[in-house]
Image (cartoon, rainbow, N blue to C red; front, side, top):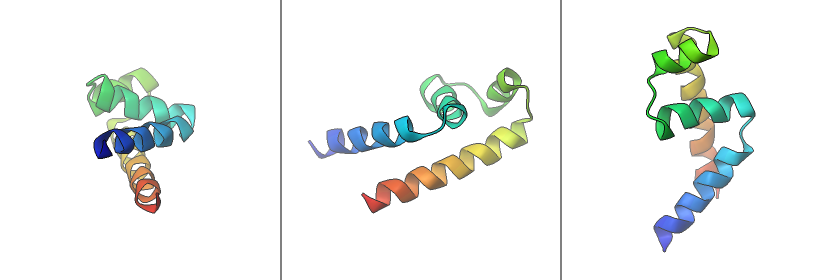
Length: 67
């Protein structure tokens, strides 16, 4: 029961992300793509994807802790 509530909160957080950030997280964590593969798709560098991913995860973490 608790785990399902946590998943529900996570999906709510993911849905609140802007489209570009949402896409990065979905491709990496749900589609199993590497940062380099995502970078190739978005026509950017792997380092840029890594930094964005890190920032997004930090914001998601803060949001989930505040819930």
